[in-house]
Length: 413
Length: 197
Image 1 (cartoon, rainbow over the protein chains, first blue to last red):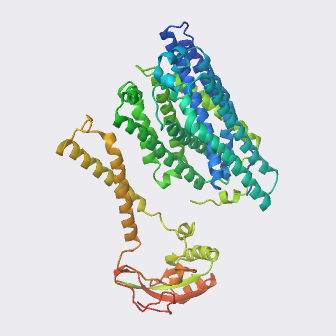
Image 2 (image 1 turned 45 degrees about the vertical axis):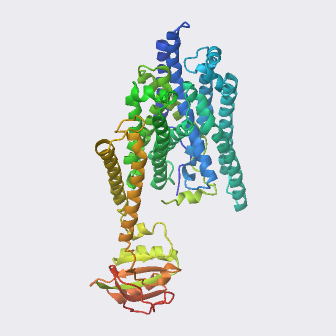
Image 3 (image 1 turned 30 degrees about the horizontal axis):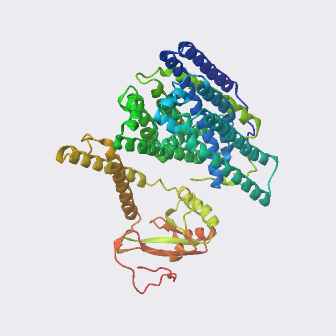
């Protein structure tokens, strides 16, 4: 079988990625002019600026966690010694290659919010607030500027470094055929690095990072389900993103060894983790609803009873009921069109989920206009398209010498 | 209770069985079933079996469970016997979701197990007949159903040419019926040709 070894970026692909990035930049500028440039230190001005920064915060954190979920997918499959995904593994790696790029943007935004002098988004950055507020004082050993900065930089640095390392290991297979012994050694090295990544991942995305970056927006409130919930949200969007790129490359005639068997497994992941997401969503919601404590229900007040009610319930319809019913059939998961539509819907749905996680804290009495945020989101999509396309074009699309490659080719569900 | 006539070929290698199944289908014989000691990936496709409807049945059982749970709880807690739990409204959906979920799972799982047993003709006191008990151990069995247009001698030699180690004509009951195994039957013995139960 002759295969097309390398991805050549089509002109239209480039045009789209630059176009979307332009949309993003224009949205940022517009949002800055209308809200971010508000001068003065009155609460109103701070509130206006918070509208600008929370939009950047939501988008950058969401897309950073989504592309990082691709690396989680790789490491989890390495640790499980799974072979089915090898035929499109390079696509997953290319998505994970966006981590350093979006990571830099995200850390700049996060540090700008923390050190910018405003405290409309993160109340705990203000010393006055911490001194007078018992709850914030109690949390200050964790929620303080130094720890936030160190941990944020360390987190993004470690993700980038370990992702780069695993990418290099994968690229090392391109040099030539491996003997059985070399293959075993290769697999062992992969297993060790993947385990290190997953350990870091457990300490960051699955616990501390969402607390610091997102949950501390509502610094008085806490939920132990929050990090898992965030992780499930981004992981299912990450899988959807992988599926979209795989389908795009299939349409262009690449990835000859990937077929609907692999798509079926990606579809199963999308289905299963949509259910998992809803399970976590409900576990968080029901306990708070049941115990009905004022300091806990405060979080859901603007979301369930307030102006965010529509988004809140739309969130469940898009992210749980739609995937549950539409991806349940075997045929749906093997159909390229259905999976494409569902993947787009899932990414949009979880983006909306992040929207309602971030914005109610800064804009309690009305839903801010979604268009700016959507525009910035599209800008990040354009950036991802650009980085993924370039990374894919640099190296062969199919790791032909990977020890598990044959297992992936004959994969059958 | 219809006894049918089958041409049964036994294979000792799945690598031989696979092309044989494809060729037998191409030649136009009617495959009754293929019996293997372990599940073989892709055999259902090679045999041209349609997808099972067990999922659809499962889905129907599941929504029956959902409807039962929601219907019963809402009837009991809002109409028949409303109780005040910690000041919550009578119609408090979040509290019912776990039970609804459990009943959905219970209905679909129990229903699917029973349906599966029915489809596979498994039940207590149901007598199952085997063409050859070694098909649960180390041989692969292909049974061709003889219709009135089947030339048996041709079918036998065709199966032999495809690599079957042993081909014989057998008569078996094709439906399920109530009964028990004969106490004298020794399962490890291969039944002689033409055995009629």
